[in-house]
Length: 321
Ligand SMILES: Nc1ncnc2c1ncn2[C@@H]1O[C@H](COP(=O)(O)OP(=O)(O)O)[C@@H](O)[C@H]1O
Ligand SMILES: Cc1ncc(C[n+]2csc(CCOP(=O)(O)OP(=O)(O)O)c2C)c(N)n1
Ligand SMILES: [Mg+2]
Ligand SMILES: [Mg+2]
Ligand SMILES: [Mg+2]
Image (cartoon, protein in one colour):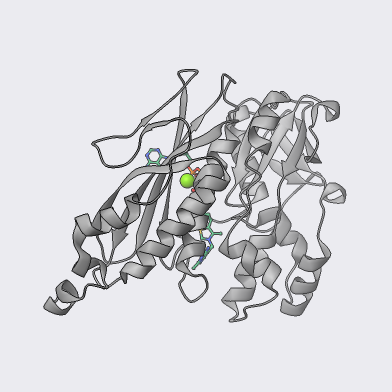
């Protein structure tokens, strides 16, 4: 760090580790169930049924977000949303978040403030709070979040419970964030509906516990792409999954954006990540709760097909490819 950064009270280096921690832990009311929030060596959360769900996702600047595409508040919301969709995908309700922030020294403190505000907004929308974290120096802004959730006495819905004869259903949007990524990647900022979806996903948090209560046999959130994430269910459950395109909604908005960009909207719906929707399997169509749409079925065998055929393109996002 140069002396300039240490002296500039508006950068993270100027404020220092503990100054930064004070900024983010003050001024928020913890939800009921948080016995002890940030400030001690660990947080304490009530876990009435004695079982806690825990998950971690890391976001790195220029890999998961760009500040010329999104502002810090939006990035904060997204960082929380991608974690809380994993909690929902187990059939649980989010309770608390632990936020690891690795900041370059010249990062303005205003960015940390906005990130923190966005995180709190998204957390509170799902009934959770930020109960702790860590602040360190780094060369690239990195956000590592651990989310905790309460199963409320439910059995966890895993990736491995799908059975031949089950139906596959989706709650939430598909393809919107991918359309937004394509738009932003070409230097455009509109249409705002798809760009907003890329900036801040809208996971159907309550649909996770709802599906669990309805007897979902397996569930996963769609972070990498419907086909890619169903691939994890198929592998873990030792079944095959077929997605029927006649059951898949390809929204008019996506059709329009795709036609402007010369892209295939169906490809976004099938393989686009980052909408953080939920896909689950249910023993029958009658068991599928309101708000969920049947998109396919489970059979014996292996792998994921579309209309009975292997999909020609990539099934979803993979790092280092
Ligand atoms: N470094 C790691 N150490 C241990 N487990 C890991 C690590 N990275 C990923 N996992 C586990 O591998 C599984 C798949 O990870 P991932 O594809 O990131 O899931 P998701 O898309 O739900 O975030 C998860 O159970 C995750 O906790
Ligand atoms: C700057 C930028 N480039 C590319 C993307 C697209 N992108 C980055 S990560 C990702 C998939 C999901 O992220 P991952 O880290 O795999 O989350 P997980 O599956 O573990 O939940 C996608 C589609 C983006 N959001 N921002
Ligand atoms: Mg992950
Ligand atoms: Mg997941
Ligand atoms: Mg992934």
